[in-house]
Image (tube, rainbow, N blue to C red; front, top):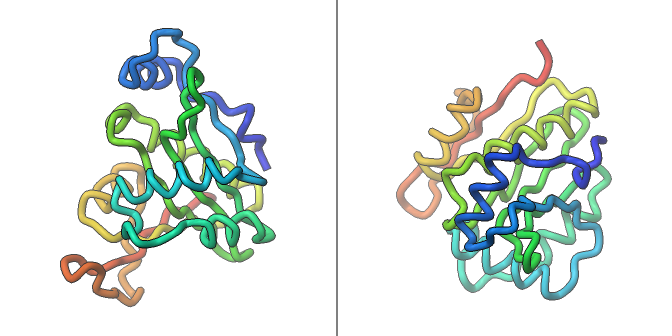
Length: 180
């Protein structure tokens, strides 16, 4: 698996994120694969997921984080600001030896629209490609997220069951081929 700690966001993305966060050191964003998150990390991830609408405010993310880390093929990647190590983005990736999956892609509002989400998805695809998987899948719960993934080459899986989520949108699956 590629070492996510050696992955560096493109300089313009990192600089823009640092500027949006109010830092001017230009050091960019730090990516880290969390293997043993601290209680502060779990609390920060939970706040991010709640603020971005990924989970309801009453839910503790600890179990989801533990399940990902303890899975044979799971990775939890966080993006941090270098100045205060604040977690500004998360992404989980894993696979079942057939398909790769991306879960919990969350980007703090103040750094959205800078390309960080796209770069995290590209990193997930690289991680999954090393495992020789033919495709990666995501579960989509909003039209905006569907549009985001469509721009990255993901297509709806038309024969997958759709489930009503939050009484407004049918969740759907999207996938992208990793091999030609």
